[in-house]
Image (cartoon, rainbow, N blue to C red):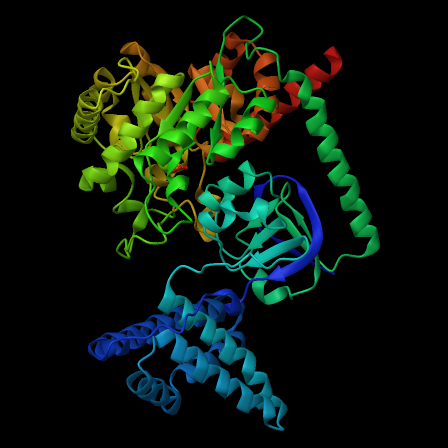
Length: 582
Ligand code: PEP
Ligand code: MG
């Protein structure tokens, strides 16, 4: 038995057999290339060799520093594989001769090398096979980019263990026999983690070396509450976790009674408690958890896992389905936010060094107005069937907001010309998730009907902490005084301009933080459907006056840790008081 510690990404406990995603799951097609493309393929090979070499050097240096030189030296063997001239010459020669894509030829040559090593009667050399495979995996990853996982052939329920999983891989898991997953990299607010939570799949991310320590067919426990993965647990441990599964489901059942109760404080302040969704199928869960509406529909998932772009009719049908199922409750459709960690399988979006600071969300939309307007028309058309609001992601200043609104007006005119009805008074909001938007919220407010604070991004940009990097996850602090001050500023400014302000980042689903969000005066809280009953329970057991005092106090604290410690104590008091009231 072995225990690995990572980052709790999606609550719940899964116990099952491991399906390890290794290089076999990367799709390496036997893609023919033209004669004229050979130089490009050779350059791809060289670039991948350089990149892989740099990655290995950096791991070697880190391991040497952290664990001693003798451990780091293991990676010299990896470097030697990369520097094997005979192998590289063979790959180049075969690319020219067979005119097939580099990754295919590379994997074939590598397989041949592995076979020949396996035949050698020398234990040391045979052990080099795992080095070769490791280097091969890195090379292929650098050649084909994002790893695609094929989950189609899973015959039994499994726990997926992978280096990384894309949000689009995660989006189809619930239909593919995956009961939990564990990854080497990633952070709590990565879209992979968010997706897992939405689909109620227990997950632990940021385990660093899970793929090296876990083998195919092992039994594993994924504890998405504590952020722990246990490999080949003892029967006692399995029993303990079965109890934990039971406790978790009882806890959730106990919260069901809050479903139909209003989200109101003990002194009568009403908060709109809404849900975040990624795919239309989630509306059933939104309703069964008692949400007041949908505060964030991440519409970009409609664009993923498919060969082309969704057309206007298809999008209209999807939004219409959601809005009709939710009616008369409101639905906020966030216009598509691609880029960052979400990509289209078919659109060749350029590879960027800093995708979260790059061609993402509204920037992509404003640069491709014809694609954007298809979505705007589809949302407008769906607005004829219920209460829809539109909101734009990643607004950095008023010019982008105006440009987006101009396209929205054009989309309305186009529908008018086609004599198609829509809600002429449709409300428009801006996500406030970039510090520049927070700092200019007084300029933005007069141009919109509402703000919705996207703290997942706001935190990463305000503290300069990549939201998906597990190594700096300890710095990703929703309670950092800078974050709390920004939140206060946005809410106060919104209210001065008479618009309502909501929050839809992941911190909205952390019950420990609920008193602060309440005390800041937020009008709406939108979170994962599964978290709604618990958040409602906290709100219903607090008065707005008390919450304001808590918030005032935490705003005087100097570190995020001090804030967390104080809020944990408060949380325990609240839970105890609800228990004694029972
Ligand atoms: C956010 O940034 O907080 C947000 C809700 O949007 P996303 O997580 O999709 O970037
Ligand atoms: Mg965001």
